[in-house]
Image (cartoon, rainbow, N blue to C red; front, side, top):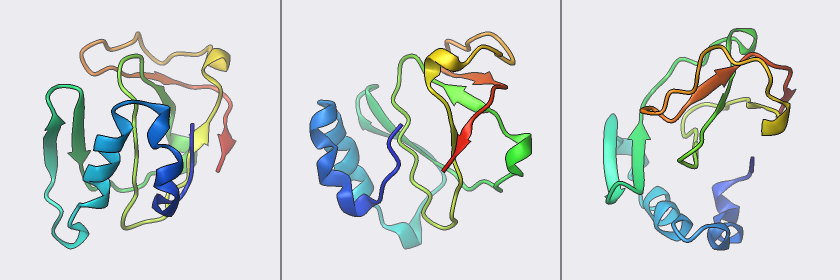
Length: 113
């Protein structure tokens, strides 16, 4: 997990061959006119999901893990706290891995940032 500012985005472009395209999309978003929905960026490999969510209480949230996609989350309008733990420490799944949605939730101990 990387937690940083968009001001430092250039430090991470070399970490994955699709990051430059994803970061270009993020940097060119018209934040004042964001539309809710799912938007393809590059075929099925890069897409944006833009939503507004009410941040729940941290004690009511769970860790999530993905097997296929890298999840880049950018909170534009609110400060967000992230709970995280190394993947190998996740031992308490709430349900089986959802292959279609590429997500699995866990109820394990986490660190807050």
